[in-house]
Length: 273
Image 1 (cartoon, rainbow, N blue to C red):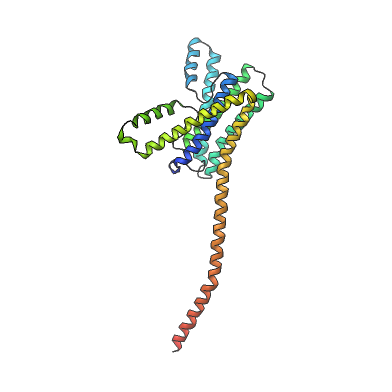
Image 2 (cartoon, rainbow, N blue to C red; image 1 turned 45 degrees about the horizontal axis):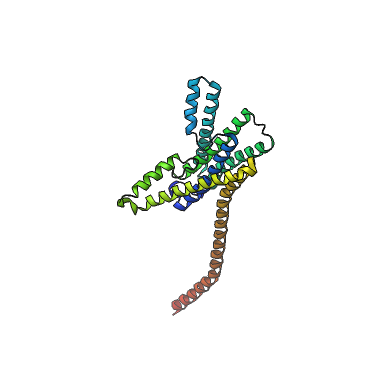
C-alpha cells in the first residue's frame, strides 16, 4: 500500500490506499464542519472566500483565508518533498512519514480540543490550519506515490472523472477496456470510503466530539502498520529461504567432494593403465 511507487503500483495497491485515506478524509471533513462550521479536506471554496474578503476590504479575514490555503499547499509540498528526496533510501519510510505527520497533527487537534479549547476565534483558526495542513499532507502523498491516480481529500475531480467514465460505458467501444474498468473501480472505492467515513464521523461526533480524531488516527496507524507488517513478513520469509538454501548447499558439498575424489581416483587408474 505504501511501499510501491508510481507505475510499479497495482490496482489493488491504489484501492487499498485510496479507500483507507478517503475514509479518513471523510471523517475529518465532517468533524471539522460539525466542530467549526468549516471544511478542511479541500480549499476550492476558500479561494472564492479569499477574493471576496479582499474586495470587501476585510484584510484580516483575507490573510487568515490565505493562510488556510497556504497550510494545505505546504502540506502537499512537504509530502512530495519527502517522497522524492528519500524514496530511494527507504521507500516505506519516505511514504509513511507524511502519514505520521498527519497523524500527529490530528492527534494534537483531538487532545487540544478535548482538554484546552476555549472556543476562541484564534484557536479555531489555528486548529483549522493544522487540519488543512494534515489533509494537504495526505493528498500530496497519495497523488505523489500513485502517479496522480489517487486523490482522496475531495471528490470534485473524482466526480467529473467518474461521470466521464460512465458516459464512456454507454459506447460499446469502451465497455470492455480493462484500464477504464480499473479506473472506475478505483474511483468508486474512493467515493464509497469517503461517504462511509463521513457517516461514521457524523454518528461518532455526538458521543466523542473532539475525540473523533483519536479514531481517525487509529485508521492512519493501520495504514502505516499494514505495510510494516508486510515488510517484516517478507523479510522473515526471505531469511527462512536463505537459511534453507544454505543448508541444502552444505548437504550437497560433502557429496560433491566424494564424487570429486572418486573421479580423481578413476582418472589416476586410467593414467596408470
